[in-house]
Length: 95
Image (cartoon, rainbow, N blue to C red; front, side, top):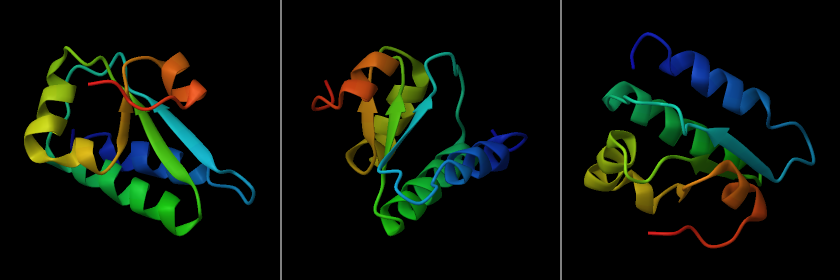
């Protein structure tokens, strides 16, 4: 939410060192994400793309965060995986 979304974006973009092609954000334990959080995730994904990298999110697909991402259409813009392992494998996102 608004209290930590900026920190999450900063941490994600800090991982975009030269030569990094994939950054995975593990949100499997995240229970809430408001519009501020979604906005920061989208900016982080855009920053990654501008660096030639891909942002992948590991999110529990049955949870509220995944539902909010689906309703807002953000899930079509950022690759979402159900587990950290699936995101690391790079298989096409499920769901």
